[in-house]
Length: 281
Image (cartoon, rainbow, N blue to C red; front, side, top):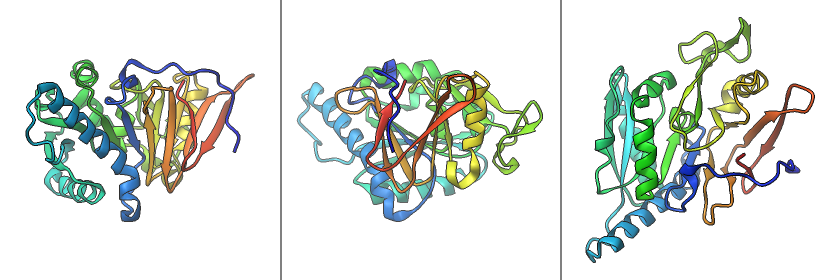
């Protein structure tokens, strides 16, 4: 499939360095692609850990598994949910996942990203609850990731939160259905709220499986987003790779669907599969 001539991309401040890369996963638990969707993040976390140790000139522990913070908004089953991510991440590579369970209605504390943390993995769940949990810490967290060169990975809701303007749910636009009601995230009208600002485009997930591409197309057509990307399950979108060339790269079994305003109205959708890339802005 041909790539659209969008011109040179501008990389957001959260994705300039190779150490502070962003990994967006559209959901899905297929074990056969665990390394494909989680491995690149874990390798970036190991590189960040080794860079930190080199700067400290400690010379010790260079072979230890990188500690990865797994943030879960806890709806009552947080421990069980963490166990699932723990298995998936360890299957993809040598790492030490560390749970951070944030009860619904409470706030994520940036101080939990201690000096020994090599990467932040924000898990899935109710997207509006994640947005509320990060609402007060989005700026400090983004700044910390940049300063320390830490990679960020988001799974489903965590991927949506990476956006500057986050699509958090809803299935109606002015009362008209734009996606199945089961995907609404406990919201009626489509809502876009402030996210972490790590990528300049909006993100929706489970695109092929849940039919959320229509929701993203609606929000772009409505002018609330200049660019959106809907990601299928078992699919990774990596932003801010080596060299900072301003492209997003797709890996995995599904596709990433880039949605932009079309000349004269409506939207233009381009879908990209494993090994393909497109400009982020």
